[in-house]
Length: 144
Figure 1 (cartoon, rainbow, N blue to C red):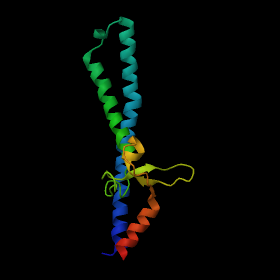
Figure 2: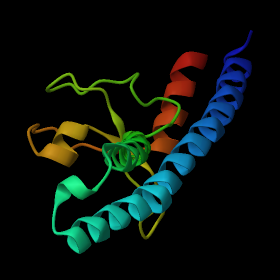
Figure 3: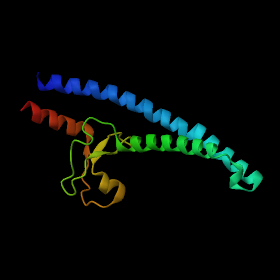
Figure 4: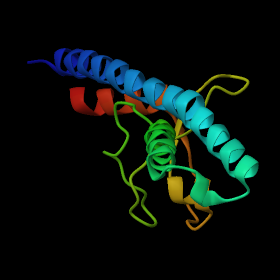
């Protein structure tokens, strides 16, 4: 199998997995925004009208919490990134797995970088590389 065939196969698989992941994330966000928010507002109204938290059934509180958790898990996964090389490359300073840390800005280029630097500021590695350039470099390396 040639490197181009391997890349095409991996790209096709990645596209299918990305679509599945987006469906999961979308469902999670819908649960967080609709039932989660509705149940939260309903619980707050019940508490305020009775002036006591004991007025609400524990099942209503649990339902609200579960809807919110499902939605937040979807949000968390959305922030991690679901791209071909996410998690396969590591930061040379702290050893964290590189992920998409920026993109869809003015120029729309997605960039890989160290999440510890970008999100937490605990890593000195502020180097980012565009996704398209990284994929081209890796493909050229595989072919040579």
